[in-house]
Image (cartoon, rainbow, N blue to C red):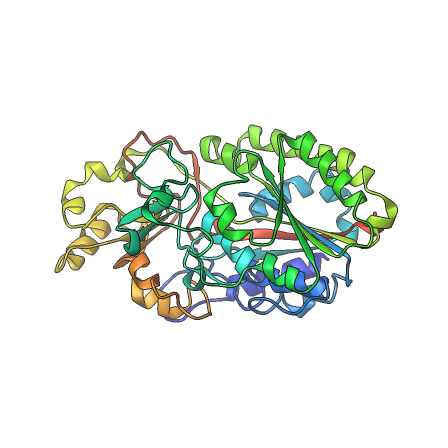
Length: 430
């Protein structure tokens, strides 16, 4: 298994897009079999359903997964980058991931671009890159509504404390994504889909948008999740189904304290032990023998300094050349530039933050396949703006009208943000 991981890591690091002038400090998405975009098709094959979305994971992975299975569980741990997950594997038998590593299939894969939750989770429900499904970033210019929107809360990005406010502008989450959805595809082919979500987000616009023909189960905390998951599966003998489990506490702590903070280690360690004791140990043998558990993440994270140099309010000359504030993510910023000001903006960024950002023409980046290999969403060009600033090292841009409180970020193309784990464990073998 170590050879599989090492070989695929080498493939990922050697993978480049010729038209983009990155050095070796960037990881570009490996849409051709080693990325999140390939997981939905892998899931359908494991459940003996027709293919969905783009190609599955590479054959060197698929051939080791076994199956077909009656049940596939996808545990999505938000912000659990590959390097962070490896630190938990290193704890050996203390946690289930290391204890059962010799029975698991483990390899790094890549996130997508942008490496952010709204985009990546939509990829997992569509099997398409962000350039095709159209959810390109945390904050996104939606020309059809005349505003920058928050793609998680489905509200105006400038609003505070508003969730679902776009509905007042005629927004329908069920019609916003043109791509077919995994839940409906599975349902049409005799496979049930269930999603376990924290009660605070189970009815969010993002969840409603993604989960057509999906049974959504709310949980209150980790104990509730693990016990409810075992009880649910134990009552579903012989039923072919996909179970999606979303766990967000690592991401929440990472943003505030960074992924290297002990709080993250304690939190996921506690969850892992509870997952073993309250779920794995309570799953019936008859259910376990036909079940595959997959752990992955939407993205990793980069520790970043709280540095006023990156606050755009301190750079009025730059802001005056923009039509509006940037969008997407702090580490992958989309700039909308006033006519005739593009060279001025590039020069300002290169002079003020020398060597800290790669600057890409947005249309060229889209055409290069950075945002996916499929058909391009009709509004993708508008949503990408004129210029993309890809952060290097621990750089970022901060434009929100509030104090900068983050110690960890994602969205960019660094190794820490882009590499995520793919850990698949046949539960009948433990």
